[in-house]
Image (cartoon, rainbow, N blue to C red; front, top):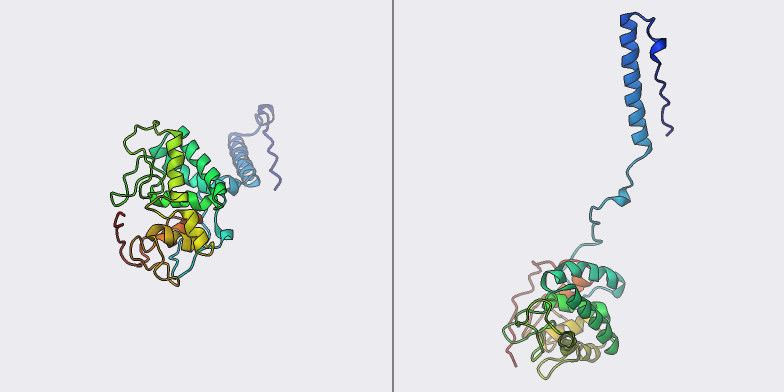
Length: 249
């Protein structure tokens, strides 16, 4: 829309008007100025894409039942998942420590032929990426909460060695004498990430047709990982049953 052109009359042209006419012209000029300002505003609308309102996630979180698990095409890219994880990681660790965490996730995922996004979200599920997290059920320490995993539980912030960070991640990915790692759970279960998650959380799969069924572990674990891979906070009301703590062996 083309803005209106406003002419401001010089004083010399309005002196000869009587008082009433002069007042009318001045009011008219003010009115025209206001119209011009409004016209300019309408002609230059705010670009909605530049607003900082958060975009609505596509589809929303869901409760994955049976052997349901989101397709890889539904997962967010690595950089977006990292962006979502960073505010949480920064609560617990220093930037340098987080840099090592993300570096070794990528290196070890490649080494053991896993999708790095799955390793990242498994870590977020298990420990929120907190290098000093307490052992799950009092027996499973480290970033991936694996039995007999190295840990940095009693270190000060910024003092967890990078070698220990790598060892923690490898304990969960490769496995320990007490935990079947992500890599083995993946290969022995048909390279299905949903089945891998149930295997890792519970140590076995008691019902291949329903990954919410457990002897030990968290019934909604597979569903939680699936939602995290889509960049969504897992729902809390799936009604899959109560978790059963690890026996610690």
